[in-house]
Length: 242
Image (cartoon, rainbow, N blue to C red):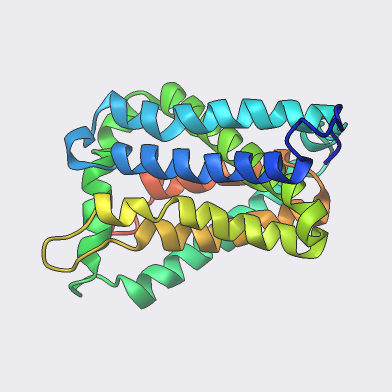
């Protein structure tokens, strides 16, 4: 990444890059833990903590991307965005369904991990009463996460590790930032809850690969928002009756 000042007294570009990435992982980790703590179950504070800090970090990162001349490329809509978004949504939903059947199948003790997550999110019937607000919230959340983790973080990593590895490292850092949720959502009998870190890693790799291939964020933002809508509101992976 290019920086305006190269004076010896200023922090090196590498140190500033590392500092921002570390800040993103730490801030998202802390606020995710707070958001998914039992005290914020089904509250407005949950959504503010889950989305607000990442949105702020995404805006800061977007400024870096603007200086690099990448922001227009990332966000200019193009023909075929809907098809790309649909393909990514299909892949992530199929993976989520398969992962649920394999790791958190109904009737097994591990299903409790999924149930704990959905209890925290709240009743989907309440979401359906406010569809425009919920849709807008999920779209903002998806835009913030994709800008930060699929746009800014790989952009900052690329000069250090190369473009072939930056998107992979970014996906693992995204999952790392969600590790604290395993302890916030822990089950008294089963222990730390791995659902969100595993989902962040699996979906993060799909979304990061798509951005790596297209160089754009719009289709992936749409895919992320659609995925969140389906698993939170439309089709709950813990079971249709839950």
